[in-house]
Length: 159
Image 1 (cartoon, rainbow, N blue to C red):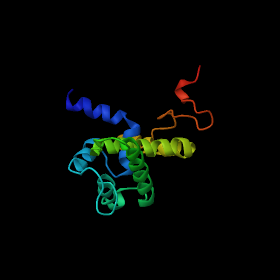
Image 2 (image 1 turned 135 degrees about the vertical axis):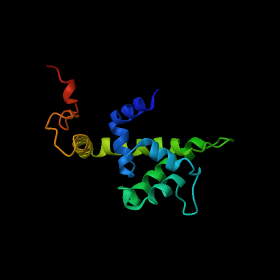
Image 3 (image 1 turned 90 degrees about the horizontal axis):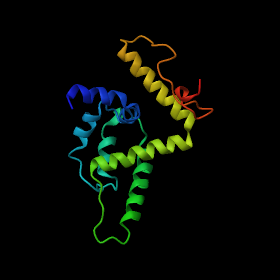
Image 4 (image 1 turned 45 degrees about the vertical axis):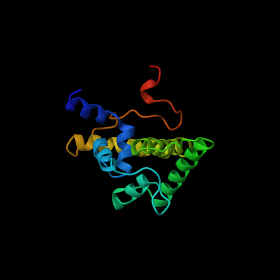
């Protein structure tokens, strides 16, 4: 796969791009490069190393520390449950932890605040489209998202 193909694919993965943006990363490769050296397990504060690294980004990370602490706690509790009774304990590498973190964030918003999630995603897509057009609005048909009322993708409705 050529580099230009990768970039085009990355630009199409809106949900991943939106999740990356919550931590202040514009590109997936930047996040992975930044986190590649992060250790497994927890630091001296009891936080996962990945969470500590994300929090160290300061204002670039748009999630509150309390939210990240809750996600971290949930992931570590699930990992402890998986490790219960195992002789060889499972540890998560940075990319595995990120996958679990992204699942936590997405599922919490999908089931807890679906209308807010839809609004956030639509704003994110509209902003990306505006940037791609040099600051001009693209109009109402840029993104056909999931209807907050019906849960059906606008493009999936029978015509």
